[in-house]
Image (cartoon, rainbow, N blue to C red; front, side, top):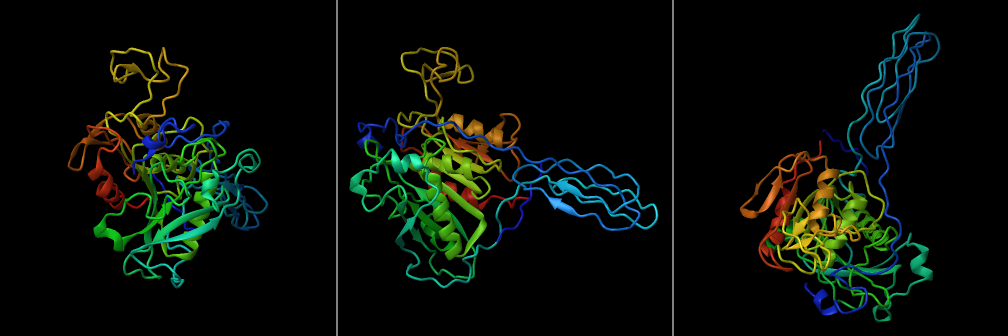
Length: 430
């Protein structure tokens, strides 16, 4: 499978687990709308007939939201203007004088459309942000579902922050140069902050100390509803976290110099849930994700058809954000493939059909499918025997899954600098 790009210019959920709605770290509350579904790409156009007048056929590009279409068919000779070929990158036939030659449709682009190159913010002078330190900013968010504006209220202690007025923090690289495009890393932390500024010190640490001069870090801050846990509220097709991410992405790329082909998101615990949700919804803009303890929502926004690379970390005995969600009061003695995990039945398997597996292993499997990975063969990744890279994935979209011994906070060295190193090794998307 080939791909192409088209240029376009920690640790607090345990403390709040008893709060209504914080059933696991980062779950949040709210309605459970219908899960979104990704759209299918257009098929390649067919070439028009060759024209005796010799006028060149035009070509209308497809919207490029997914896989390129099939090759256009060969046009038939005849009279009239050159044919038109619509669809994913097909080229119209060109007629010649007299009878003309048959127009030849070319294959659709066969790839994905995603931003690349320097962002619009390149060459803009830096304002108030001191490189090497986090600076907080407020931002207004549009596109929030009316439900959140009419049926729910944010926890009052977060004022002035609301579902449509949020905070984030940015740390420019040391030695920041306004004309040099930098990788951009969105970071989210765990539950527990109650004033709407959870990201003011970065939220998470995904750029290691020795690489502070090589990337822009953005700390995302959550705002949560009354009666919910103090976490990102990323569940549901109408979550207000995606409009928030969109607003921050737009602001940062329009005001700072970003390499649009190197935009990453990651986090710990609740921030990891946010990273999963955002990556599924904004694949393409998100080149790759990294997560330490998190999982996949049963109800989530409409999925992007564009894949993303991923390095995922979950402690084998993490009880807050487990490898698999299992059904209570069940007993199971088989293998993981047979639907058993830690002596209980994995949600979705016989005897546990009434619950949904939100674990990171389920998220991993969904990513493998979306990335077009073939088979389940793995090899050890880097120096960690508990990190496995799936060998059947496209080179541009690798998937690494780490399951270190221990619980919710296991795998620190894989998290930092492991995730950053994984991102920096990614090849360009062909």
